[in-house]
Amino acid sequence: MQAKEEEMGEIDRPNMRNYGRQLFICNHGDCAPAEEAERLNRLVLERNRQQQLNKLRNPHRIKCTLADCLGVCQGGPILVVYPDGIWYHGVDEEAMERIYREHLIGGRPVEAFIFHRQFPAGQEPAYAPDMRGDDPLTPIPWAPLETEAESEEEEEVDGRVEETAAELRRMAARRGRKKKGLVIVNTGEGKGKTTAALGVMTRAWGRRMKIGVIQFLKNENARFGEILAAERMGDIEWISSGDGWTWTSDDMDETVARARHAWSVCQERIVSSEYDLLILDEFTYLLHYGWVDGNEALAWLEANKPRMLHLVITGRYAPRNLIDFADLVTEMREVKHPFAGQGIRAQAGIEY
View 1 (cartoon, rainbow, N blue to C red):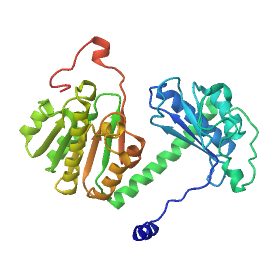
View 2: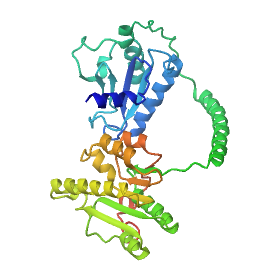
View 3: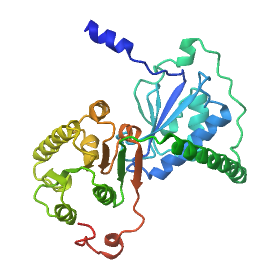
View 4: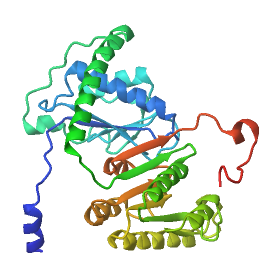
């Protein structure tokens, strides 16, 4: 135990600046459209800039985080303020302004929108800056946020600055010739996540890279078009270990066991260092449903993934820690669907 503590002591510990409160806003899309959560997040960030509560040196700064799911799938948008442990529901922009001004700055919860308290009223944890002895918060006079025209002008300037910065990054990348095995995540509610991964597979096969595909949920006896194509192409290892989709499973224990077994097979393939590209199809579901501990899985990947191995992970509900871990994340969003609009079912060679 002592040796372990000494080992941990040698690891660089992350630094954290002091802050006042943290706000989590659910943007999963079940309790309310994700776009509403994103608007609230932008509003809080604008208020933080106006109130100068976005400055790292300000001990009263307010942290605002979009959370993948807060576990309350109705009455949204849902948000929670910590360390106070106060949960709000039905929060629109007008309500968010009140919560920001009265609660986040003033320390007075807005009773009209509270639906849950982690602590009895009046017994919430003390405000951290007061406990630390920081200087009192001096709010900047409240004023309307800038107009749309002012915002557009500022965005135009920011756009020019970003274009220059992007060009400098491209030049630096060309000079550095940096390469690494990427972690690529295709997620979202729309179609095309696996399809995009198969496009990468085809490209890698053309470059004579060693490829493996592990499907965590699709039935092991399935004969989809992509499987037939891989057999004809050759030199692609394909493992389908599932018993069908979670929503059609007759035995969830069997589904979970198969998925966990596929993860152990995946780990074996990763540490073998025999592959250039591995596709982990529907792996996000294992993390989302808790069949595999997400933090443990990502820590294992960080410790064991060969430096030049590319991983492509697909599936809905990619958790925030996976998104943070990945190098490239794409969210598929449905704009139009032939089944919803015309009643056209999946067709061979297009969907499967």
